[in-house]
Image (cartoon, rainbow, N blue to C red; front, side, top):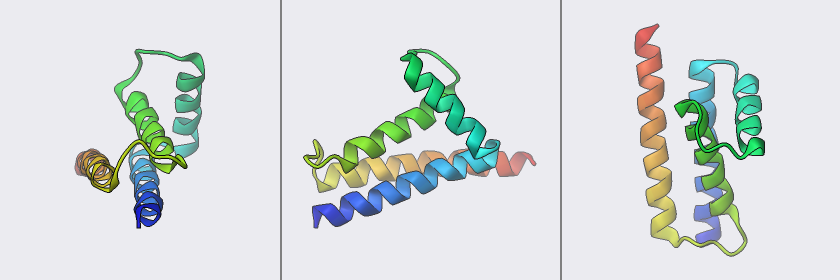
Length: 96
């Protein structure tokens, strides 16, 4: 059961991440910016880049073989990210 929750949550998080990227810019450009941010170990940066990096980190944490989170925590974290992504995308689409 926990493996199914992990798999579906990881998919949902990736889709939320992609929704933000497509709403704001070219996903490839944002992937590059996030990769550079992570590789440099920066603490500060553009809020969007930080958010996308944190979503990526959350996906990694959830998909670990020995997860630190239980089923409830995974679902809560995933729900929070989806809510934030939905707000960002709605805001972007409303401005266009």
